[in-house]
Image (cartoon, rainbow, N blue to C red):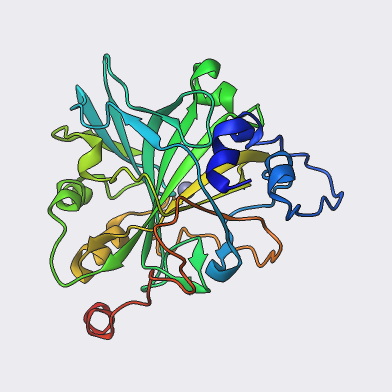
Length: 295
Ligand SMILES: [Zn+2]
């Protein structure tokens, strides 16, 4: 059976199997027809390293990105004391994603960022390489109505991961946020900014993304569907430095809010709708020129 046929027949309904939270060692099923039942049968704590050559290629229906081009009514920027949060608010037409591995809609909630003291600020790594910055677009399953409730379910949360890499030119979209950071240096401060469609910042992807089932740990582990975009977003070294304006509740600079990738090596990671077989990552290390500019 080809991967296309598998996709059409019955893959979707079980692709995100429940996270067992058990220590039982459910082995990866290499058989394609049996694959659907095992794809997300095991979860581990995130973030993880994505070892490109060990990813499993898979064909899924296209993700449908709905309303990401709609301008929100309001847009709030917050220094939580841990990260920078972008919280748009649509009276109607809140963005949501459907299709791909999902049977139901996942509603967009917010974006936050992870950075480091230098150019190694991403949480996930690709072939062991950390990127300067990582952006998380938080979504929750529509049927649970609110994120707080969605966190109580194994299939409640979806996080889209975008890596940011250093380029010599400013990213003008990021400037809309970063130019305001001097007003929210202190923890638990916020302000409204000029709203813009969220797809100005995060680019919808249909192919060439990674997918795995992991978790986040806040007060307790929460299972999360992770989709990791291969397409990176650019920012300049000057823009990266601006994140260090933000401070914690004790007024110390937030130099580093990125967790280190889990060295768990057997995580099942999918490369969805590959345009070609990548044998190594094109999420390449930072260009030397830009790296020097930052340091
Ligand atoms: Zn995060």
